[in-house]
Image (tube, rainbow over all chains, first blue to last red; front, top):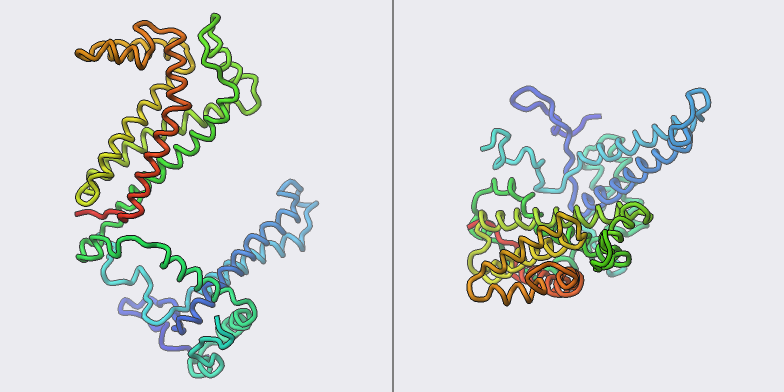
Length: 107
Length: 264
């Protein structure tokens, strides 16, 4: 796969995160639905994990291992969906920390 | 919303020319598939439009209009102090209304009925300790927050034209907050309350000319007794709640109308 030129290295040689520019309407779709999925997966993952371990009250031998793995997997999946969605940007959007008028050295 | 989707892109064609990774294509295709079936974004856009229609404030803040210092956001946390005082006031009002079911402003007996009721609330009543603690802490927090709110307004120049009236109302409110605190402080009718009351009477009496009249009016006499506690109680649970709630309403309404002030 040959991605856009977006994940080129910058002047200091650090690799920047990949950015994909999408139309505004599609950006809204990405934001709304990926946030929804991420929240559902993380919350659901914790509920599943709680069920598998009976709120962390069971000993290691008693817990339902497949269900616990599923719970942790769901939490990770939610985190992944959220992190993945952050590469999409609408036209004209920059990352706030890369904006020119705010420097980390307090001006 | 019309049946025709307002969409300027053929997503399939657009994605082909964009050179995305397979994961990205799958991700976007899945979300577009969801979007076509659950039109959440459309509804959110309606809410967004409504928000801007309803939010009829002054169009631009001072910093926006004149493109002033872009570092000012460091101070924004302090802009929450007004809301914080309001929240503390609401908590105090609700917990106070509940305490009112159990308190009696009577000085009869030794220890007095008032103090006995207080001891009952603190030791026997279910969640009574919690309830009185909530009331006391929210009162303390409110006094502190109101004072810091005043400092913030002063140091950001938020009292200046056209907001002079609201500054004056704020001064009235901070004074009434302290009267609220003082009247509540006397209600336990223990040693602390009694001698705080004594100080209050003597302070009133020290006012030239009007002193005796003020002591009679506020404390019901020159020495403390049932009349004093009764007056403090009525001020605390009947008079001040109506007055202060109304003035807070006006205070917030004016902020709503004039918009949040940014520094001059």
